Length: 192
Figure 1 (cartoon, rainbow, N blue to C red):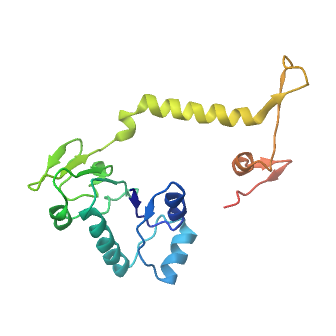
Figure 2: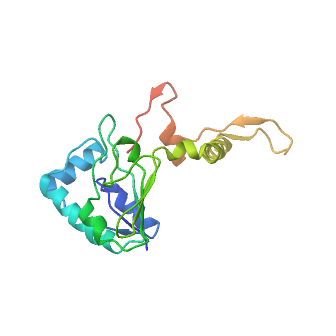
């Protein structure tokens, strides 16, 4: 069972669409509106929200086998999400992968590029720069995405399979329409 928590309310639908369980942390109406208007980024939740989130996450982590933390804030230290008291409640053999270790870490005790084992047998992996370790896979994924996108932009120019290809723009296509900046001499604003 995969469980997830995030400051972005839209992440709930994404998590649930993949079969995960959403760890619900109540937000005030004002916080929900701020989170929605900023896309969930660049806002600071209230002290009550932080306290409530810590309680929800603490309970979930006590039963977790694997935890992955990713919270980072550009230009600042990563927020501390997992504290020593929570680590002490976790089962021996549990693993935390702190993908924010390079910017201060989400997990207390994480060290960039090192694996630490706590006194109660919990392993903390300080993953400082995972993308650099997956450069070939990242390049393959990016290239595959580009090929799949470009194939929506081209079509045979005629009925003959050997015909040359022509540009096939379809602003009603969900992806093409969202990525188009201009069309027919008009600036298009992405629908969000």
